[in-house]
Amino acid sequence: MSQQRVQFDDVKRAWMQIAFSGGNPTLDAIHKRIGYGSRSTIHKLRLKLLDELQERGVEILPARLPEALVPIIEEFWGHAIAQAGEAFSAERKEYQRDLEEGRAVRSEQQARITTLETELEQEKALTSELRQLATNLEREQERHQNLLRDAHAKISSLETTIQKNNEIHAMEMARLTQGFEHEQKEWKRDRNHLVNERDEAVNRAKFEIERADRNADLWLLEMDAERQAGKRLAESLRENINRLEQELHLTRQREQGLAQRNGKMEDRLYGTQEKLDELQAGYNAALEEGKQAANAYEKKIVELERTVSDLLARVAELQADKTDNSDQGTE
Image 1 (cartoon, rainbow, N blue to C red):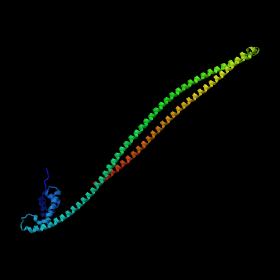
Image 2 (image 1 turned 60 degrees about the vertical axis):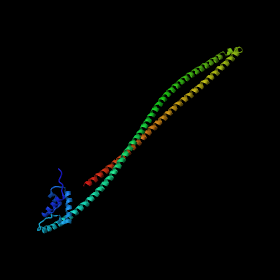
Image 3 (image 1 turned 120 degrees about the horizontal axis):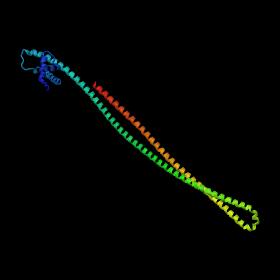
Image 4 (image 1 turned 120 degrees about the vertical axis):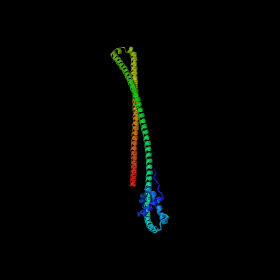
């Protein structure tokens, strides 16, 4: 059920009843006399009544009064007007004081609102900066992850290349070793064969010379008859010796050729080893580069985490200041 609305006549009737009974028609007294209505409405209507009392005086009283009561009422009315004026002045001063205090409070609240809006803008800017920093951190982390992925892929490729080169080197070493062993066996067989032939020729020559020495006497007796045969035999022996010397010379040349081929094979082995060393050095350099990139990425992550921690601490300080200001405003 809605509350009954207070009218001006209700306030004027209650004021007169309280004043005629010798009481002080204050706001509380009038509100108590009426028994209903809003105190703010009664206060406005009471101020309006006091203004009319100041302007019209007794004219606001009923027109028909006994003549004998007029002097008494006028005297009482004068005292009431004076008392009402004093109450009105006091209440107006109190109203002005409350109004000034309200303006001061409003100004203070407006300053607090401005401060809170500034802090809110700072917090929004800080939040935006923090989000941008987080985005940059994610991008930087993704970039370093891509670098690490590329480094791992490069290292894996180098390891695969080195493994293939090791396999090729092992196969080449096996092939060269097998060829070298085969050539060495062939050389040893040819050398032994030539040595055997040389030994046989030398033995035959020795045998012929010894036989010639044994038959020297016989040859001397048969010198004339056998002179030509001896000459032919000597020439034949000299030819055999020359042939053996040539064969020995050829054998030595083949030995030198085999030695040169052996040196070339060793040079090829050394070249393959140097290539393997170069690949190993490249692998070590790539691995070191990957480690340095990983270390740089970890340092960057630590710096970004430190920056985020500082920003979060700053946000916490702003929130604490905001809470303190709210508590002061409540007090």
